[in-house]
Image 1: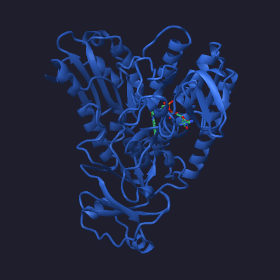
Image 2 (image 1 turned 90 degrees about the vertical axis):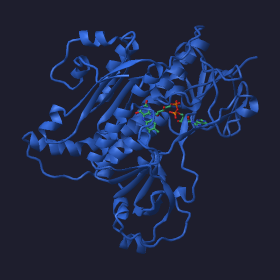
Image 3 (image 1 turned 120 degrees about the vertical axis):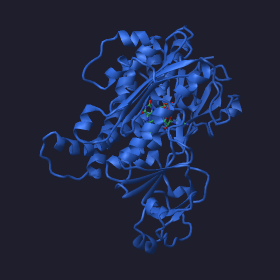
Image 4 (image 1 turned 135 degrees about the vertical axis):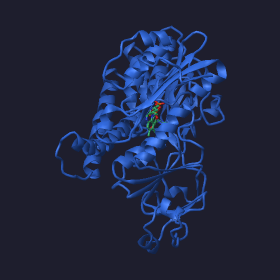
Length: 484
Ligand SMILES: Cc1cc2nc3c(=O)[nH]c(=O)nc-3n(C[C@H](O)[C@H](O)[C@H](O)COP(=O)(O)OP(=O)(O)OC[C@H]3O[C@@H](n4cnc5c(N)ncnc54)[C@H](O)[C@@H]3O)c2cc1C
């Protein structure tokens, strides 16, 4: 049977664009459909705009510190519309780069939604049908609001980048990395941030000691973090209410009056103050409520189940080690498979797919020892097992130090950093490395190479320190802090 294409990719995000480009560069006839903007979550509403906001938010502290370093500076204000305009033109530029890369590789672009009609046919939004020998689903995920009345009054991470103005008071619901990163960003930009997380500690899944220090530092820097707390009710606040109410969650906790609230309405999130009641009984009004409560895979109304693609419990596409679905001609990569939701992983999965399907070299995706970073202030960089995971598996030695780094200590700030190695007692392999420090994302990329290579504690020790740096502690810790 003659197909229109060798490969049809649905979704122009990190994974889809890379797979399309690499397959086309190898001579395959490739098409890609994207329903929103080329570049996907990472470029348009994830990693890239978020990191630029992290940079923007860091200047306030830098200006403060600069005075301690002898600089005369005048107090200035952050201009959100100016930053936002610059941010959007940068995203336009990047989207253009992605488009040009695809065009340059002769990938045919369809700017439309697509779904599956059968094992070899994609149906576009206008009803047109395109056939392909292989179909790659790379539709990513989307933020979800909790299932509660008036949840539409809250915003999600996609909306943050389009706020016409910064809220004065922001409530963030969630304790994952996206919630914590936005708490740090908004706090740095001068927003009064309250964060509710229903669990006992933020950043579930990361090393306990590291998450503890991040939480402590977030509070130290001004984030009003409430653990074991969730939202129970929300409603649009009335004008009367907002005029009389000037309190925050913490004021409410101290017994300030909550004022009146009006009934539910139908306007969208972010368009006015919101009254919120928490599980601890407190009530407060916020200018915006951000739900960072998880992401669902984009598998709805895709025609997947109908043609036999297996869908998992969380709505994800179930794939094997080679990203192949239950329908042999259909593969899936990236967030839609809910394996490891990170851009470099989606890209790796895309490359492995092309290697397997178009280069005759079956390549499973290696999900072992993936370094990653949380861009809080300070950052958290991590690779390998947490102390808690390692202790479950085998006897370990924990090498750990926490100290005030030179740069901020000189400026009189109480910031602390953490350098931690989890070492196998039996064979001395470094099983995990966890860093909480400014620039930890950069540090863990390099430490990740050593850990991935199977370096032992003695390999770290044989490496001469780079002095004076924070990360030199990783090669100078002589005595284990704990043996477990
Ligand atoms: C706020 C935020 C911050 C993040 N920060 C980081 C970070 O610092 N580091 C990191 O590694 N990762 C980060 N991520 C995660 C990262 O963005 C994702 O893991 C990555 O983008 C996944 O790539 P993907 O190709 O699977 O999907 P996506 O990039 O989501 O792309 C999927 C694309 O498919 C399109 N699409 C969906 N359905 C259809 C359809 N039916 N037809 C046509 N097109 C469709 C979508 O519009 C989208 O463009 C962040 C995510 C968020 C939300």
